Length: 492
Image (cartoon, rainbow, N blue to C red; front, side):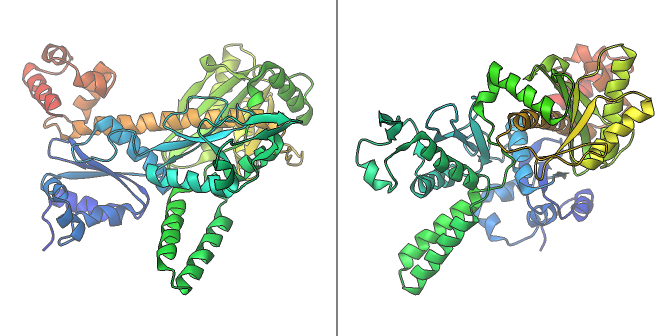
């Protein structure tokens, strides 16, 4: 017999889409009981309300939680990986009673490659603290990831931890002075350039290009099984599963760590001047990026680099105003128009280059914004993600700069920074909506009163901290309802 649940909840369950996302279980007061992620929201959430499942019998806390659930909220995202990140963020923010696995940072790890060293090492960290290093992840299971790094050391001959190679003359180094030189099975004496080739292969694996290695392991597993070496086959099976769970393609670029040095930045700007056929050095560059989750929470960011370095005082964030839905082209046209209409109105100079995160369609939309405003645009260029191709709004052919081009790496830094900035804004808005949705459960607090109190206290965080006198001071909120609202907020 199905587990009973209210008609309102039953209707919500029917409308949940077969999409990846995050779900929030709430009690009758709107308190978040549990937050989870799903590759298929409809299947995952629906499973909680099916009787006789072994998982529920094995986990009494699930059965206890089901008796308290009065509502379920779902947030759609683009991929399972994105659901994982959002789930982690929301759990840390809400700390739901029935989440026991993600209330701290132990589940999430990054692989850091210390490119600032002559011999880069691979290590596990929890935060991005070094601008000269490259980070891969986050990865979900720490045990799996540690096992993967050990296998990568055997496969590629990379260094883990704080190993310091010893110079032995003529540009050659010895990695290990002990038995590890034989255990790890790779040449122990080599040049820095030879070691960097090992690092490149290992990084390629972390970027998701590991299919060849996985195929080799699968062949070994099948061979071991045919030879009745079942213990070996089982170990290989577990290793393959660990690798497949750990590796997810991620957009990472091997920026030259020297790009942060002043003399190299100047070289990058000179290269960019030549690549774009500019008349002067591009000292001021702005980059735009659009961010949304399946057409919702559509926002944009603009970052500004001055002299090749971020100028965060000039960063801007935009909510899309002209339409509702998912249309990157219209969103790009709107925010570019808003930015340069304002600069023109205030008599401020335009940047030397405007970089667009996207391809031909996004670049043409940016140009359209200038044409509508009857303004002369700066140099416009798009950076298309698939092949890191530069595209233009005129008849110039697309341009592919070499991977080691400092000009390309400078543009990638701009694009990545704009992407980070817009994603942060998007996540902030999602969290704000989730917090404010609790107010919908407060009896007597309709849309008008809700807007009134939020406008008065600016956001839910300040509202929740409000005292009874503070609430009574809100125009249009009488003493009786102020007391009711105060009690409700204390119970959240």
